Image (cartoon, rainbow, N blue to C red):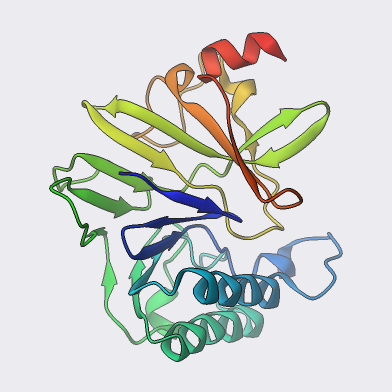
Length: 233
């Protein structure tokens, strides 16, 4: 698996994967946001669609934020995603997360627990949300759920986490939340504690390498494994 990172999404062999849009979170937040989190997600997705021209787009769970109702803003944001993907000529695949109890009330398409990507090589890559252990054997897993972020010089940045052979000898890629209202969990702060990783897929957190896409320089920054990196901060 050789992903291309941009914004808070990963492009893998013709597929664009993003996780944790948490549409409707703004209704539960006191944070002011300039154009609304749903509109922001759809606008940024449209930019990624223009750039990569993917054959398919996979939403890797927690599409909605609320467990028990669907705010109008969440419904509108999901409709915007469906429309943007359709207009780009791509196929939309939706994987359910632990927050998505109401997703079938707003989305008429097929919902999946996990999804195997159509890769160009012999490697098997499976996308799942990450709140449960996957059922499909794979060479690599792409998950969300944990909303990873790292703090560098006092600034918190959303990050990807890359673990080579980290889950039962399979590679793992953890995506940050695509929703910029989601602050993210500082993964460095989870080192050296007895608190287990939130996702059962993400074990041995110290071996994961943080990857940050810097939107200002448009560079992808790869850091040493967290066990080493945390001692450098």
